Image 1 (cartoon, helix red, strand yellow):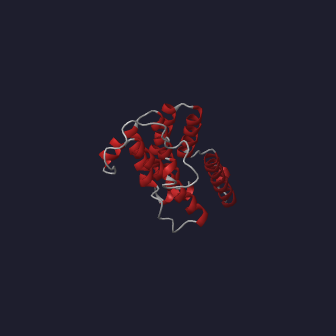
Image 2 (image 1 turned 135 degrees about the horizontal axis):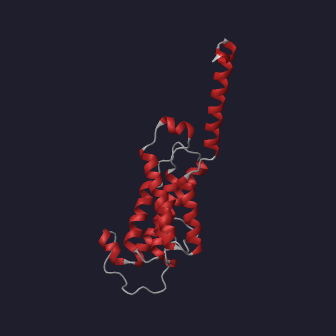
Image 3 (image 1 turned 30 degrees about the vertical axis):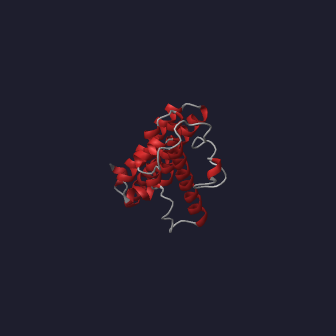
Length: 194
C-alpha cells in the first residue's frame, strides 16, 4: 500500500491500531462482571425472598466460581482483574448453611459451616486494615456461633461430629434457630438465651 511507505504514516497507522486495541480492551474491562459477587448478591436476594433452594444454588455457583478462579489465578490475571475474594466465598458458604438449615438439611448445613470456617477461620489478618480484619473476625465468630447452635439443637449431629456431651435433651422445644437471632454478642454469646 502506498499510504504506509512514508515513515510518519507507518507510525500513525501503528498508533491508531494500538489505540483501537486499547479501546476494545478498556470496553471489555468496563463491562466485566465479578461473577462470585453477583451470584452471592443474587443468592442473598433469593434468601430474603424465601426461595431457599434457589439461594443454595446461587451460593453454590458463587463458591464454584471462586474455587475455579483461585485455582487458575495468575499474576497477569491479577494485573487486570481483582483477585478472587476469599471473604465473599466464606460468606456465601455461611449463607448457604443458613439456607440449608431452613430446608432442614442439617448434615449439608454442617459441611457448609465447616467450609465457611475453612475459608475464614477468624485469624490470619496481618496484612489487612484493622477495621476490615475486625469485620472478617466477627463474621467468623457468627459462623462459629451458629454452628454451636446447630450442635446444641441437634445433639445427635454433635455426637456424630465428636463435639457432643451425653444424649442431649431429646425433644427440641422453643430453641433458637441458628441464623435467625444471633444476639448481640459474637461467638458463644449468652448460653441462657440459647
